Length: 504
Image 1 (cartoon, rainbow, N blue to C red):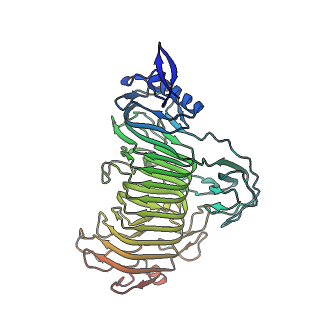
Image 2: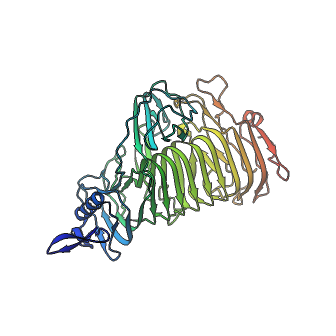
Image 3: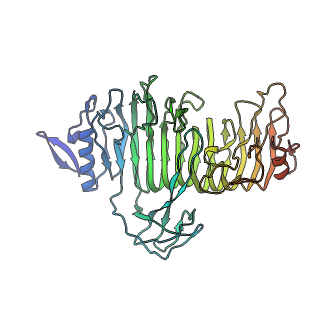
């Protein structure tokens, strides 16, 4: 049953729930968030869909309120204003949160083995399981944003028959905590909505103070389709946002046809006591199994004044398809499969660490590297990399295809390695902007930074690089590495029609 207003009171009518039935004005001035919260609470209680007025402009006010969404919601062409310029009651509180109605399941898991594909446990329904061993730290970051790492943890899908989707990444001699959230059998759809966010003007000279004022997705089997976010009102002062769409602790998530603008890059003093740039994301995904972005884009993927639009942590199985984004960034790992297809990545490029298979196909990339394996997390990729029918347009001709660096002196919490095998099958490199003295692109610069062999945390080199159909605008063949020992150690197999050039 939906609602309409009669004599100032909501009464039940067939249909859907509307915000106006609970007092929303929709004039872009009045604070409509209390009415929106009440409307969703009623919809959740009665399992009804919600539909906004396509002609309305809803102002979401300054109060510390969160609308909980548990049913299909269609915002269509409705406009929403988020004004953070005057300060708010709680800048870390989300405006909307998509949650499941299902209650957690109690599970007991004492230990796990890396690569494990089954458990003796039989949950009553398929669940998204999160495990942690707080006695061990991983992803011990190096550099200007250095830290002591994160507790060993991961998520996976445990089926009713005991099988696992999203295989176990680490050995757990003990599991200190377990949570299991049932996966909703029916998909929840959050559709439409044109959001304008007037940026915050927070002053804080040292450290990060992330803002939310966003939409959080914590329900598995959710589709977000057609959300738009424009950023306005940015000044020289401000602090970053932790993702307008923040997806956390769930499985089977699809973002489709979303347009989220990048945010201005600000500066702060990092944990090493030096100035650092503050990253502010449009999309942020943490602890997600099966994450898909389809036809998502942004306004200007080459604007270097804007921070890259997406960051992720603790992910399993990612697909980007038909997207145009300034950046794709994997911080604390992805495993399983990571596929980028028919996608354009702008100035900030592709940044990743993890394990499994990384496939980039039929795509165009503009980053300084074709793929940058993040050195602050050890430049590690345990598995294979496939580049197929792509274009790479670096900003400078004397470029390095695969960016990585690990001098073997830092403990990241895990062994680090280059990809086992890199396969390049069709790649055009536009190095036409070359300057005098350009000798061709390099596959690797110096991944081990010229260090010796007796290192406390050695960095394992790639076994081989297989190349076919690689062409450069300059006509110069690629070199292997600036480090002659690395160039000699990595076997490069030139397939017919391609010559990788001498190792240098």
